[in-house]
Length: 599
Image (tube, rainbow, N blue to C red; front, side, top):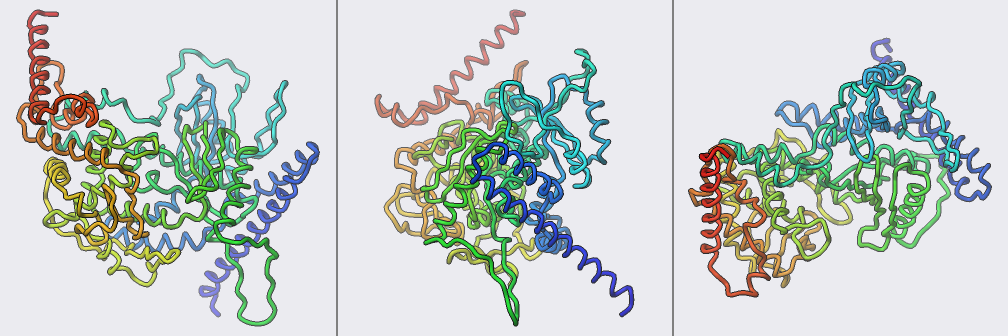
């Protein structure tokens, strides 16, 4: 063989050997931690955890060669059409997180001095501050070796009146290095972690020149920032460091609104423990060995057992993780906790692959046309303002259901703005084939194969037509189905029926009662009516901007609840809207009089 042909083979063999050795190291750590949980003596516990630390420190990261190869293949294809695949984004974020640390800092930390100190351990790719109970810095190094170098220089805290569990992680605290920080030093720019108040949003929207600009402004104010997305993946990575002691090849991935393109600042962090990468060696002939493993009656029992142990570890060893609840008897068992350093409310499930495919599907739809994301953000904000959706479980419409309603509406436009799920399934290649627990979750992942029809409707038109569409939708007879992209007869007697895209026998809106559906329809009717009124749909500005357009639709006092209206003599919707317009006129007149009086 020529050396040019041997070189790639040698490099590949070296990478495989390195990955195997890393897995062996972490597997050794796993055995040590299993012993730890059975120990009673504190001295033994401390010693064992320190041994685990040393092994984990040398084995930061997991074997993601196959995932990287798949993501690279998809990314090369998608770059040709200007899109990045869901897998490519996931792998890139995970790699960034593996090279990152989270550091609690004093409020008056000298940023330049701190940055210079970190550079002693290697080049830095990304560095930013945010506030959550305290000031924190997220630092992404250019290499994992720099993280290892930094961790080797970190000390265990000495606390006079308490004992510490010496489980080391990439969550660190910066102490004053001796010099007194000047109180006059520049204030650090901290990245926002929550959305702006609704009143501030209305003021901002009132200054825009068009409704399309208002919708753009709302989306920019609410969507996840680059920094917030990085922080979410970092929290997953920190949690994976705990779980990897038991399952060395596992990954913990965010799903849902954190990664589907529709998440807003402050939304919960949904994660799932992915054990799919843990596979055995399948010899073709000769002798073979198998791991000795515990057996259980069902996969659900295994999931409950795994989450119970991981939940216990998070509670005992996870710095900053508080309020841990193991909700193992739910339809989808989970561990719930608050991660104080990030401010995220976290839910951890295991092997929730159908939810991950739903996340990928929503991401794909959002990438196909930017109007999808703009409309979803606007409708969600409108719904939350008027109590159609809620953070409390109950009979309200969920954000997922509302998103499917927006997608269905866009499929029904002429021409359609986005394709049906069946169309995406028919375009899928062999590599896209995906059946999970009997559910067909197959759809194309190659953006270049998807042909989208030309539709030039503005965001203003689409928002108005959305309200019109659902103000007259036959909810009593028909169901919403994004697989077919058309109304179908309801298979069950529920007020609202929205078919789950993959688990097609399920109704994702089964929780919604008739009262909440009536409120939704009433609000759609009134919002549609408001859109057609020149008083509310025309920008008016004399000094202080007056709410108009989308800002008017977000006014909290715009619509009274269905129940309160039933208690008094019902008046036509148009009369109530007219009274609102009169109040707006009066406010305008009073402001004009005040301005003319020089007050």
